[in-house]
Image (tube, rainbow, N blue to C red; front, side, top):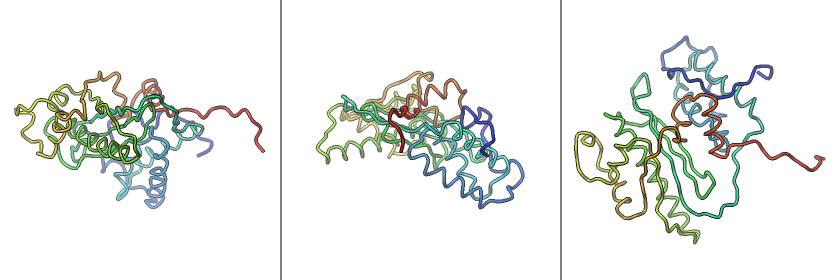
Length: 257
């Protein structure tokens, strides 16, 4: 595909693919090999995390349209070969995270996709995009599950930093664009939106009460985690990609032997 035209985004903005669309792909082993290789690339290219986990869902029975989605990733990577994740010296030692969920986005099971990414100082250190295991009865529930996931990850990171003699004194900031989920993290009142949420999800409230976590609202326009839940227009995608510190490598000034 070296002669193919590159794309500005790894996935289009059309509705998500289902498991039964199109005809079976002629070489499933080839599909699985490519999808598996992209899993390793997400270690340094979080900008393709969402679409890679999406095509990975069809490993058992890939269709032609799934392969077309995989080819689009290749065309995107082809045009951004000089992009990678950058880490910089940082004067701050706070943990800031963003989480989002796409409620009932799977056309086959209506399971939601939740994601998060976490900054330590100015550097992206942890990210995830995955299909939720259970159905959510409301968007607030789906978003709250995402908050629970990122709070668990932040607790692990705080514990790791403590062992490295770098304790975090300030609360972890968790940004979410769902107002109901933000209220649920600190308000113990039970109502219609919370009756289906398991008890373990409410561990978030414990961390909030202890001052280890603060859940804050962020406008959807600035919800950078959207890059992990859906296809975005190229302008918005490039803006969010830059916020993740996925950029071109600095130009080399020395000669190459």
